[in-house]
Length: 127
Image (cartoon, rainbow, N blue to C red; front, side):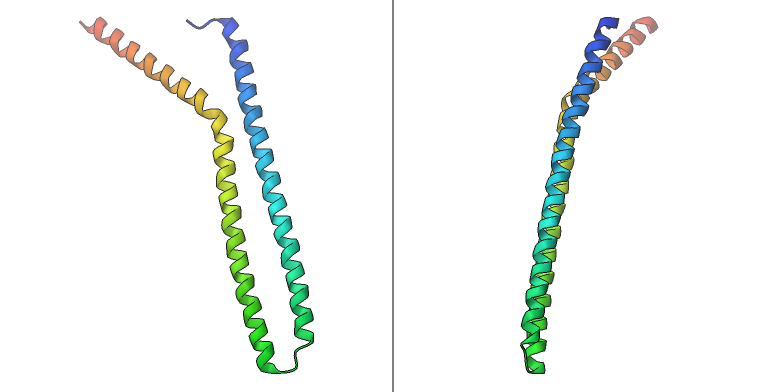
């Protein structure tokens, strides 16, 4: 049976659940931001190093070869980083939802119990 004293516990539980979810999201967003900043720094440094190499090249063939290898490595690095950040975002969503799993299961069980009780009462009333 539900009593008014239970509402205080329910409010506290809801606040704890939201806090856990917020903490998980904050940590996840910080990790993603740090990863993006690290990738940006590395990408900039690689670009500067590439430009320095290009200034020392004397033939068109060498420029084309150097540019091709730089573009290939840049693309591979970008795809790798995008995959990594995509995985981090997926993990962030999973971690944020974890704190809601138990309360949602409890609510689903309560609804299921109430539905069975209502169906049983309706069946008894009809008989």
